[in-house]
Length: 632
Image (cartoon, rainbow, N blue to C red; front, side):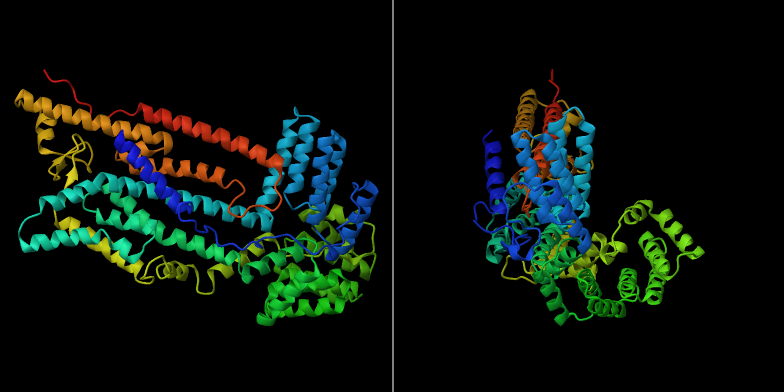
């Protein structure tokens, strides 16, 4: 039991140190302004001075303003309506809450919070109609993944959680290797203590190499990896495979965590958020100025030029919009959205033939896009009222997307932001830009190569990974040439690998092989003493595995030479722990939905209880590795 408590204390202290609790270091390199949605109130037409709830008439007027400006989402107003919906629920006015949630979705159909507000209102309206509540929750989750700002948070938070869960599981694996095999390492040193100069120097060197992580000032991950490689000759074949996996993850996961965190707080990432705001939300002067400033260093950026053209067109400045669209098409002649939007500018300026030509160019690049056919139909309608090509183009648009056609046909307004369909940069395109800028022009393989030479916490930043690789190769070759000790899986005694046990990786000692495998008749006292030793060792191992599995699920499998199964269970366990610890994520949301959080807490809580119960139940069904029959 003392050994189990010792392992528990060492593991917890190591994990706390890794998490930054003991070292008091920042675990995330984010600035406080990262992903902030704070804006100047004077620049928002949606910021109302009145504190009383908005009436349906006022909301309808604001909705018409939204349509006239060609804006897809108004997050500030929608979040205000979400708040009003929550207040209405607190007052018991469920119908009012439903109305506010509907308007919230109407103003911002792409962001997730309004759907969660609707689900909450429906739940309070009638909890029995759970299918409607679940439908809104699903819509909210889909919006969270598909909308660029929320999806960026979601995917980074997921990557952060999974990466740290893997590294924490590997930390426990490294500690287990040290506890199990360091005694063999010291036993080897103690056994080789003689007066021979060569043996004395060799054993001194063995002691010296233990302190190399302190000399190089390696962090906890690299130190555990170093000591694991140092024990290469003592560990089993399966554990060697996991050491290789440990080596790969320690090289790459911290590197990508650090570089992605740094990139998210860089101008290259910020400009993608500005592009999203200008294309999908209500932009402000600050956003427009940042986009124009970006052109001073990247004057041929087609997506920024396209977005500035969209901003100018929405404000009715058609000459400026045409100029930006032309520059965007010169930089990227495959930009079908640019051809369609410049056609809208031509149509607004009554240049019908140029508009028709631009729409036709867009259709040639993307013939399955309904919006292009619909815009062409509008241009044909400006040219003549009776023509077969008008009907043909209209039917083609309806065939591709009937909902889009019905929506725009129902609009009775001469406003050019509502008469035709303005294309925007999709979330998929924004993600493509994000990834291409993150990976860089050199490509992903260069990033993988660069990870080996990035700075790690040591005095030899560039050489450390190479030295580790050489050390790993040297230890592997040395282990093949030299006979290392291992621990007998039956009695725990240090032994050489003479006799094959139950698996290809396990070798029992000479005495255990004679007594319990060959069933030789030895002196009763010798057999009895060996039997007691085996029973004591098996009982101790079984107790340690059971006890620590309550704190670290899967520990019994790692301790009992089933490393892959144990590491998988431990990884899942740390996923749950980190999920509850970082409930709002590594990048917390500025505004969270209490209803969605309650729902997620319930689901995650149920899953964790089921996982923990099943894992502990399977652990208690485990029996000692080698059961010893009573001898006559």
